[in-house]
Length: 290
Image (cartoon, rainbow, N blue to C red):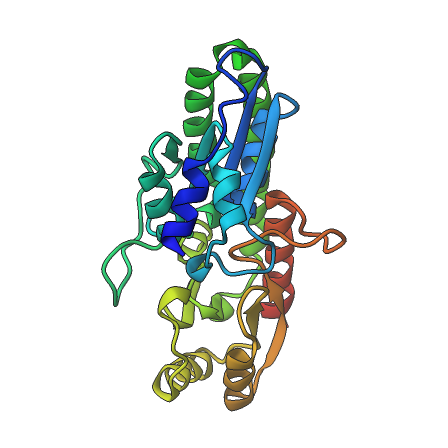
C-alpha cells in the first residue's frame, strides 16, 4: 500500500504553476483541523481533510485517493504530536508537498504509560488560538497577497474562540467539586481538564493503544465509584461497548456522546469546532449535575 500511494503522489500533475491562481488549495489531516483552517482562509482557497467524520484518526488507514488529495494541494496541515504518523511518513516520502505542523509552541502533556505526548491539544481552546496564529504566519508566507484576508479572518475567529473559552470556564465551574471528573473510554480530555478545572480518567490512555482489558475496565470502575460520579460518557468515534460495560459495572448511566477526534455530521449540532466544544460542555454539565 505504501508503494502504491507513493506512486500516486509522484504522479501529481503540474497543471497549475505558481502565480496562476489566487489563494491556496489546502488539505488537513482531520475534520477539526479542516474547520479551523477554513475559518481563517475563508473564500480565498479551498480546504479538504483526510480522515472522514466518524472515523478515528489515530488508527486511520489511508487510501490512494487520500494521497492524491494531498499531492494536489499546496500545503498539508497536520496536528502533530504523533496523531498522524500513518500519513505524515508517507507524505514526507513524496518529496514536494509541504507538511506543516500547527501544534508548534504548544505545551504538551506527556503520555503516562507510553512514550510521546498526548495529541488532543485542540480540546483546550487556548491551544487552538495558538494554532491559528501559527497558521496565519504560514499562510502569509505562502500567499502574501492574501495577508489582509487571513489576518482579518483570524482576528474575528480568535474573538469567537476567546468568548468560547470564557463560556466553558463559567459553565464547568457550575459542576459540584465532588463530581468534577470526566470518565470516558479514551482519556482524551486531559488538556480540557487542565484548562477548565476537571479531572479525567479513561479505560486506556490513547486510542492507538486501546485494549479494554478487564483490569483497565475495573480500574476505571473503581475511580467512578470512589468519586460517586452520577454519569460517564462515550465518544462518537469509539466502540461504545467498552463504556457500556464500565457503566453497568459501576452502576451509573451514560449521560451522552461527546466529540473528541472529529466534528459532527451535518444536522448533529456539532458541525464545527466551536459547536462541537459547546455540545461537549453541555453534555458534561448536564451529566455531572444530577
